[in-house]
Image (cartoon, rainbow, N blue to C red; front, side):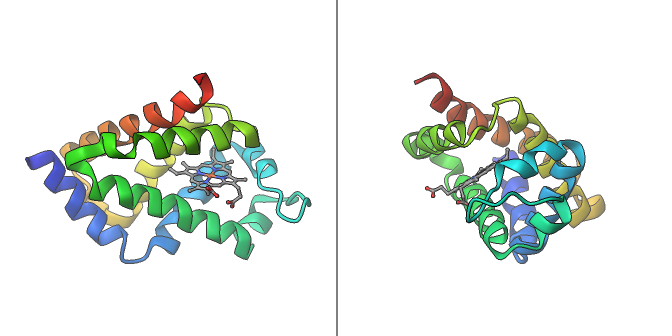
Length: 148
Ligand code: HEM
């Protein structure tokens, strides 16, 4: 299917450097929603700025984890429901951390931003639409962690 192909192609490019594109994503996220920095206390100390957070090796591991989840979704396009249990559990963890489901909308915007930065004009309107759909499926599954 054309949509899946667009997702696979664009991800193949971005996933060559997940650390970089993931950092672009989170830099944008913290610009849009600076309070999210407070939800990353490693060794029980909060970062005093987005810049400090983005420079932390622990935080960069989280960036990598996020990119791995997206990679899993891209690899499972034919069978996204196979990720359901995992994503519900992941949602539950994030609820416990204090993340609000609304913040995942901002994460989605930031993901589109990072894809656009990374791909330039190759990030076409159909590609954007395909990613919007995929992301909404992932968030729907994670959001079930808040209900159950
Ligand atoms: C774990 C915060 C979004 C995937 C964590 C942890 C924190 C956190 C504090 C625990 C520490 C760590 O493992 O680094 C947040 C915040 C988010 C966010 C504030 C933004 C609203 C996401 C998204 C994904 C994700 C969008 C993937 C789609 C993960 C994974 C783990 C994790 C895979 C490890 C879970 C485990 O240990 O089993 N997150 N996160 N996070 N996060 Fe996030």
